[in-house]
View: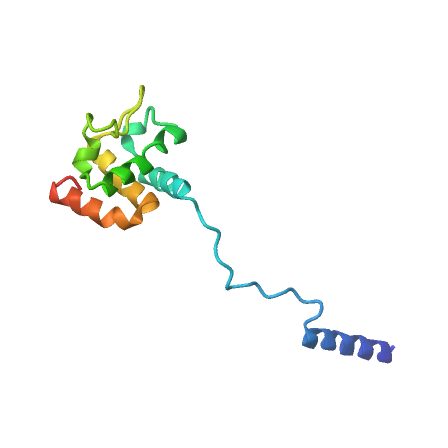
Length: 134
């Protein structure tokens, strides 16, 4: 009986030393899965808690219609005020049964740039701050 116990312990010790029977080490060098700009934007908007939409707000599809259009306008050199002025390409975030207060619309612009055109975020926030709107 002692021989079997000693043999079993020796075998277990050898397995432990060689790594057999153990879980592989996690690959800490693996790249995290990329999150799409749309998902980042929707998550940020959810975290922002837009009060204008307490009763009725946009669907995700309606909301996702804006970020790239805003980024395109900023890339063309337009200001935040220009982008949110109603007669400038209908880029103000509103729908048939929902709307957004201006200060929250400004916040949406910043969130959109952070997710969809991060290189323009500083420009947009500086623009909003210069006008006293952020």
